[in-house]
View 1 (tube, rainbow, N blue to C red):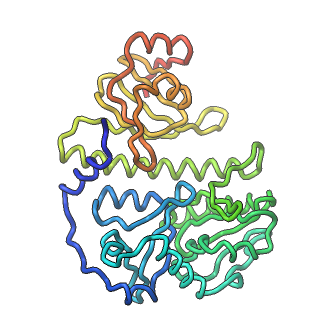
View 2 (view 1 turned 180 degrees about the vertical axis):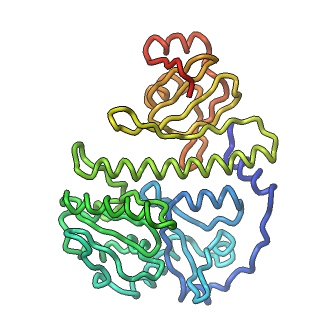
Length: 337
């Protein structure tokens, strides 16, 4: 059975970083602040520099929150070593960090940049972390629940969940950041519902739906691509015969964009990303099935690995009988991808 702990241990053996001294708690508390970043940034650090990743907790799926000590010279991430040395727990320190952040300002630090679209003006590298201060966002003059985009640490964009025009302008701004800002990594929107953050889902036919799809596909393409590079490097160094399948996008004649991944016969053990379609590539053709159908028919072969974004471990290619049944139900393409 696959073990994420063993995978991380393998990364630790590749290179163990030098540990820094632990900062005294009395020195850290006055400068303690919460930090909200794309979750993938933490996951990459856990893979690439195993043992040095900050303590973090997921926030609405694809973001995460951690703790930093904010000095004029820069930020110091709070690691498990600090928590152990301080005898403190994450939740207790998070409350202190939120209080420290609240003292930096309130709702006056937003301005309306487009009709129904508000942008933060702190520009102190903690703008996105203000999502942990929901009372600040609730006071904005928006229609419905706050829906936010956090494209970089200095930007927090807010619109109302019941304002279709504002939400469209929110997603237009998200796409602009992804195109123009090299530091922009994740512009997927979150919605504050009953003081809990969740991914914002565009209703069927919503004018912002197409833009939301573009933002999500870009996130997955970039994150799966970087994750694959790290895993491939690990397997090259350890000599493990594993195929880490890529994710790629294809545009249909209708203009619709689909994410795809391929598992090739004879490639041995495969680690597949979650995609709209899965290709089972034989010697001469490829059988395409939707992700839902792949899970339904091949679920007994697919083991979740506990990575983020998630991958599924497949030990062996479907046998002839299973492939024959699938070929009778799904499309077979003569041209291999």
